[in-house]
Amino acid sequence: MKVGGYILFIIAFVFYATILQSIFQLVREAKQVKPNIRMNSIWWLPAWKIHKIYYPDSHIRHQIAIRFMLTFALMIIGMACIAYSVTHAAIPTQM
Image (cartoon, rainbow, N blue to C red; front, side):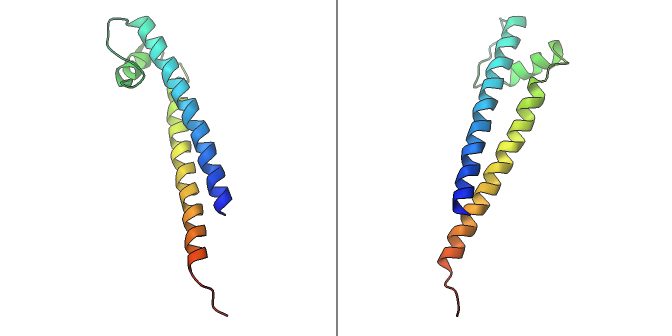
């Protein structure tokens, strides 16, 4: 169970890396439309708003939202697996 939790954390990390790539793409596309507005990969909410207006059919925002949810869910499940393994190992079994 503990190994499964670690594997879920690794998968969550991969999803997080893909989120960052999508955010970089979103900011690049928003800067092409409005280069005078201050935005970067850390402060990307203005880019989200601009991207939503100028690229309404783009799937990047949908990918970011879904991957955020998947990352969060995988981390919670991974922590639950690890917590179960640790607490199960710490409780002595009765014979």
